[in-house]
Length: 145
Image (tube, rainbow, N blue to C red; front, side, top):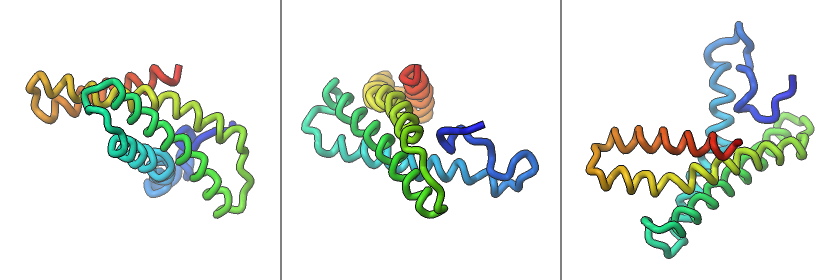
């Protein structure tokens, strides 16, 4: 079975692999998607002149985050292919990156409005954290559909 992204691939060591082997896919996701997404979201929030409570801010940061995921996945796949001297199926890589980016647009655009709404209710940090996590996870999965 072919897996278009390491995030969906089974653990490298298989069912009998060591626990260290299981960290490989997690590290792949962190390096290829989470860091670029966070960097691009922060960059977009820094360059926009929009108020953090505006729809323009949410859209700008969501598009920035999605751009980070798209570019991060493609770039990481190319680097990984070059380092392992294996060919990269660019059609599959771009398709996977685009799919992940569409989910990321939804979660990235919803993050700040969700945080603002939950903070306006004077909720403690852990409640804002949990509510944002749940809402953004839902939004990401909604964007994949």
